[in-house]
Length: 80
Image 1 (cartoon, rainbow, N blue to C red):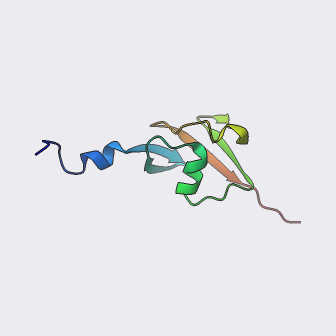
Image 2: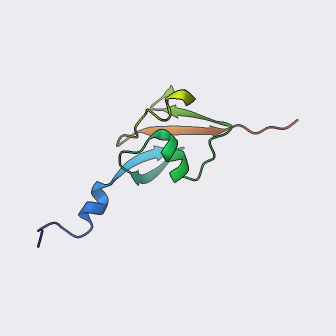
């Protein structure tokens, strides 16, 4: 027997982040682009602010989600 509490491994593989003022448990060690997929948010026509700074699209693959990150994801809507 490993001596670990049940469910502890599952909790260790997630981190808490805030997206648009809502708390989410997301897989640990994912990129911002993968975060969008996890949240079922389409990549086209969105802008992302991470911890009060705009995150350029070309950095989404290189930026890892960290515990406590705060994201604002804005969807652009066309119309006229």
